[in-house]
Amino acid sequence: MPILSAKGVTHLYNKGTPSQSKAIYDINVDIEEGELVGVIGHTGSGKSTLVQHFNGILKPDEGQIIVDGKDIWADKKSTREARFKVGLCFQYPEYQLFEETVYKDISFGPKNMGLSEDEIEKRVLLAAEYVGLKKELLEKSPFDLSGGEKRRAAIAGVIAMQPKVLILDEPTAGLDPKGRDKILDMIKSYREKTGSTVLLVSHSMEDVAKIATKVLVMNDSRVEMYGTVDEVYSHSEELRKIGLNIPQVSKIFELLKQNGCDLGSAYTVERAVELILARGGVGV
Ligand SMILES: Nc1ncnc2c1ncn2[C@@H]1O[C@H](COP(=O)(O)OP(=O)(O)O)[C@@H](O)[C@H]1O
Ligand SMILES: [Mg+2]
Image (cartoon, helix red, strand yellow):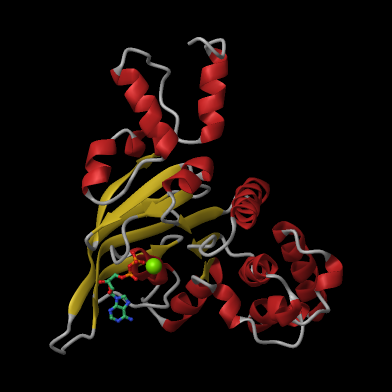
């Protein structure tokens, strides 16, 4: 049984007004437990609108969202359950930090769940560890943290609810390459350690290739493709047509292949290095 499903989901913004528009249309997708799904697509393709349906922030105008076998809009209890089972971290989540200390910010979600102080403390410490925030930062004001630390503190706040599904909307946006890699490594190891399902919305096809097990491609309010990284990225021409560029290193490998040097397919620099070395390095 999939952990998340969208069945014929359509969402309209500005319903009933002249500017009414379909942000997502007839979305059908099943996401299996334990996958790390990269959600990609050009700006405005519907990525954020789709993921906000999975924890009930947005309600479908048509169709159903099923979490763990239950329609999340069947009754109030199911909607509330979905909010805890599916943790959503918005784009630029650091703007939502508002408490006096980082500790209080991370504990906000677990507190809402009505957990005991002991349990809350355990979860805050564990979440801080997952995102690589040192313990001494917890008593600081969130406003004294660096940009990357703020981002990680905000993500820890969602992780502390220990959701079955963690959704991160563009978690590396605006960070420098070092900050970006830290977040990606963190997401990868979080999933490995907890076995949680993770959805990572990203506009970087290389970032997605680094850590995702599956890729969901959105285009013009619809799901264009859903499959493994290899299955999806091998359609480079179709991807290009919908404004998605496969990573530069993949293009180089395609060109090499067209010129008689088939090294296989590489979607990350690390993979490219492995393939070249396997061929005996220089002189291939
Ligand atoms: N709050 C909103 N009100 C009206 N239209 C919106 C709103 N949010 C998004 N949209 C529109 O819905 C479509 C999908 O947007 P979005 O889900 O944000 O895409 P993405 O995350 O892929 O950039 C776009 O055409 C966008 O302009
Ligand atoms: Mg978005």
